[in-house]
Length: 570
Image 1 (tube, rainbow, N blue to C red):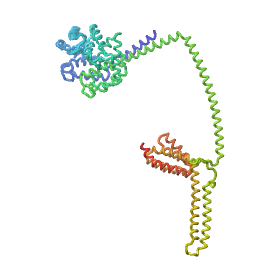
Image 2 (image 1 turned 120 degrees about the vertical axis):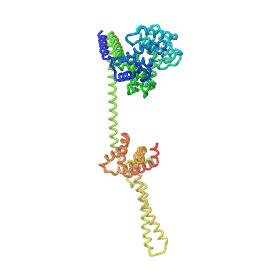
Image 3 (image 1 turned 60 degrees about the horizontal axis):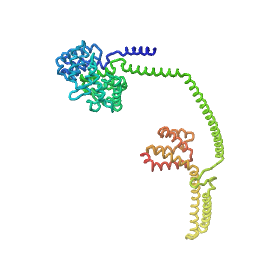
Image 4 (image 1 turned 90 degrees about the vertical axis):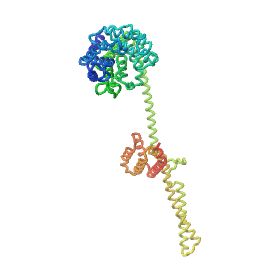
């Protein structure tokens, strides 16, 4: 099909762009290993130390994966030198040394098949039942043996299959991992080694086991991160295992690459952990892990394959859906048209209902507007209405109709009459120097007149104050309460300054009031909501009479002085 041909062409194109190259960090690490060979032509743990077969095997493998003749020559030269040592000491090597020997020999050209067979024979001699180990069977060591045997041109499939079957039996069903030994609890290094073996020898029977092992690592990284692995050895082994699994999440692999980059030293090598001196073993392990993760390719092959697998699955799914649709095109079309017509009718009915509801609401609004106009007209006809909240009575008319003022007038006239009589009596008996009843009466009358006049003046003043309180009382109390709530949120210094400015607001010329109110709200308001709130209160405040404004300022000042500090602390 055309689709398959296009996909194959795309695969070939990307495969060409995915050819190997030496990335800067791997090249720097390779130079570090090349320059750290000892006098024997091999590697120790650190530069200048005697040959360490395990470190040498890792270093040779790391230089080989570079695919660069500059570094491969050093690897092959070291492998040829170590080969002579293997021949002499093969009978005394333990399992790990035999694994290292096999890893070196399988990559050496020309191959020495006889020597490889001798190494395999020695491994068979040291085998304990199904696997390998020193004191007891070791999952990790046995997996390293199997991985080395898989590199042979003609591996013993029976031994490999036998171990894989046993490995499946040792997997912990509760978490999908493996322990260091068959009976120990799961740990990440052994799980990674087992995962590499099952992945390379996967079949239908082990697919489920592979998925459980991958879930073990995914669950691990859901609660922890790469930094929790702490040492370079663990990070490298886990990254290499994940990089070899196509189903492993790409995000976790990329985070592992970043983790190795972060702990690299400036000399190109890696130490046992971040900040530790570089050594050959951890440098080689890190190089192999980065190579497995695709850091030595323009486009990592695992990413390409994963992307194409997803694309092929999606195309197949779309093709199946298209075929199903073509087979039922008439039925689907009729059903779709019927649904569209039904939905159209329902929507049309909803639109009609909304139009009717809107018309009814408009009629209600018009009636409300007419009622509002009537109320406004009635309000304009009322000249001086106000409500006495304390008594529940309404006080209407001019000040002289107040009974208290009338009472004051009677007392004042009586007092005035007393003054006239007093002067008359005083003038009549002014020549007499002794005190008599007429003098006393005149003095009492004079005093009574003074008290009556004072009472008259005070009653009129009290009436004016009462009228302001009755007419503007509700609005005054509302403004006072709102200002108190607002000022209680401010620090004391800001409150005092605002109250001082508030006293000037009512005395500001009318043409400047709006700008002054805006100025105060912008200066003292904290946030948009508080500024709008303050601005509304100030506009209500400035239209009140002078006495009402003074009453509000006194009440706010007294309330804030008593409760304001406590409210601010809260």
